[in-house]
Length: 371
Image (cartoon, helix red, strand yellow):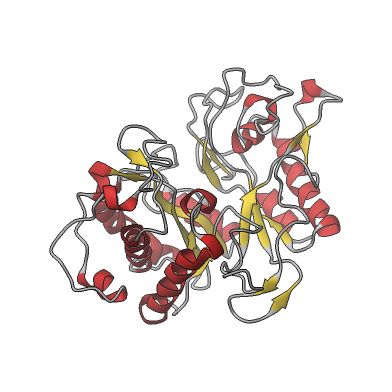
């Protein structure tokens, strides 16, 4: 449900502005977890007004279903303009046993000292280094801000970039422990779930033990283009394709203490970017199914195929890796806005008949969850 909690104040406004319909979709599908409900990709200076706008929508959503978990995302990007506009609250210093100071976040102190990933996303737009104290303080601060509006889960994006230098995940684990401790006293129900786009070492266990550091794993679904009938633009799920998670989610001792051979995980129809050849498969770039990112490929298919793909993918997971679950496409930004039956659409929505650009997947989601 990408960004639905605050669609008018965001770094990515390619989402439906109809919050009431988004809440209706969550109700009619029976959803219990709403992924990426709120996030920023850079533009951190928008955070205070975004949180203010989102809070009434979290209240409305929980009035509809008090059990529903809302997820926020804290991604692998910080910008100089954004972070240096935000003052560090005293409780952040105190969580790290530091004397409070009257200052904003220091952009340079968030980054890899050797220049790794600096300006990766553009000038003064970089990947933070989670071995740096300032970066850990930043992530803790963001997590606490999201908890203040009733968020109960955090997706932490490409952790393998931010934790590149964190041998044994000591710094990352320390950060997550501080976030979970804060949640005990400040989160809506006293907990926070943490996940990232990762599923194997060296990024999932604490200090080379069996202790897992995330509550569950998450990853793109990696649809395989069916090149035997390429004109249909059909895809399917498969083990050992690209870097797909299927059959590879690491096991061990979970955050809450139970043992597992393979930690449960979610796969999603991810968005990232599209190529300059939409609708045409590059055999050397199968991570872009038929030239699109995953959700844009999906949105370009017929409603009948989209419905059947959800059902078949759920069945495939049940047979081939039952600890994996398909995170249903509720709302997601698209990299391509030209469709046969939708004109100038910047986002996919599962809405059936209410949202004027809905893609009509509500009944299929209900049917898939009934399998």
